[in-house]
Image 1 (cartoon, rainbow over the protein chains, first blue to last red):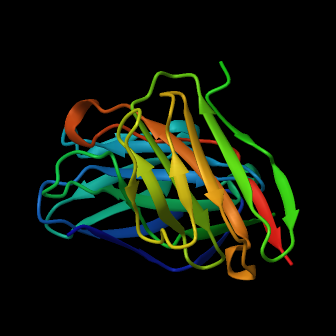
Image 2 (cartoon, rainbow over the protein chains, first blue to last red):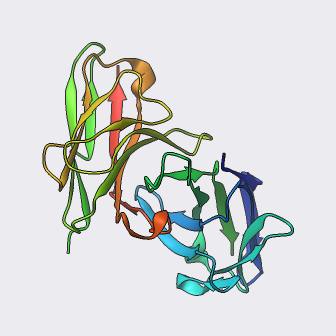
Image 3 (tube, one colour):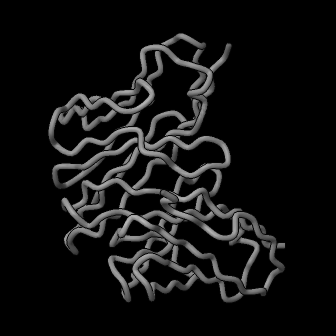
Length: 117
Length: 115
């Protein structure tokens, strides 16, 4: 069975500093991995996804994530934080169970990113 | 392009009342999902559908029912609302291609309070 763990429910950085949001996964099959962002009072928006092509995935708004199979990790990074990056971030793994493809995702608990001026 | 539209955006109910949340998508997606989001618990899947006329239980289905009579619509019903069902509800949809590598597209949520 697949699962996702996001390390740190809250992360605080200064504007211009590196953003690092951690995600570790568990999967019995090659995983498909996603990062979503949720701004206040909005739904989730896709930032980027890993689907077994390049291990370094570039997304929107300057974010990227690196798939590391040996570490079962898919950490999200951004070189320089902007105030507008303040939001909640969710890592998710595709639930590729024996019952076939249902498109279901398993989400982590979320990490709230605070950006200080 | 509207994407995924949820109706209503806000609602306050009294315990025991019933209501239906509507989700509509205009992307011709085969798969649709209902989640609830509670503080510190991420998103939990309530029910989902892999096609018109089909539904299946997710992680937390108790107290909810769903129907998918048309491909573009997915309804979530609360027959007898309880305070524990106070939450933010999200609908999502996705394509069925690619064996699980398709992202889900989310609506803006319905904020439901049950007194």
